[in-house]
Image (cartoon, rainbow, N blue to C red):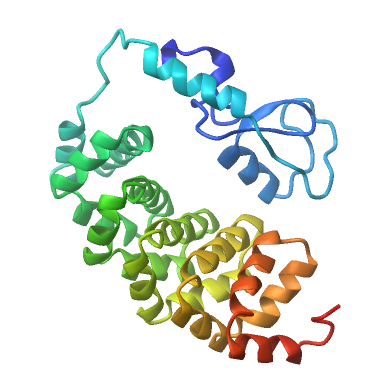
Length: 293
């Protein structure tokens, strides 16, 4: 399908069809994930024009293009069959005789298929492939880890999958990645927590899991731009559950969030807006010099 779509639908960085197109101040459009990764790497120039960008570039959603891509993919018939059937990819992923390269290709294709197709996500979870995906998250190969996490994130997009994924042991793996994974893997892991926390019962489960909230707070300290943002977003998602606010406060989140708010991280201020709702949160805030200011 991607080969049949106009080139304007493809991100200039990833060369893949954009799922969340945003406009840079240079006037050019990129997929949000790709341009954010470019900015988080320290670049402050447009990837196309090389013109300088502000210190904190604004990414404006390109709603018109996003709608156009969505409508175009719905009405454009596919003229060729996919290169691999999902069941074939799952077999290659779970087979002990498959080479690592084959498994990596299968993860990559499945991540692309599940990004937009809910029926593929459903079939994949029903096929029993989740344990194999989790096994790759335990891999020491950061490339395998990242592809497996991306696939896991896609599977978590469906509310029907969220509780089941937690029951499969996802939180254990994701929390470990938050502490020892590569920067990209840690950012995706935090996003997985945000996705799983959409279901209310998962918020309690995540909060009760040893070191889950502490790992997110540590990522606020040690992470780079994208990691900090995703960690703050995950905290915002799980701290809508009252008991998790106290846990975040006990992990020392308040002074860290205040410092990040001063640096312009808007989501940090939103998390503080939740923590201030409990007595312990207000008390911790008043201990920080300059908090009221």
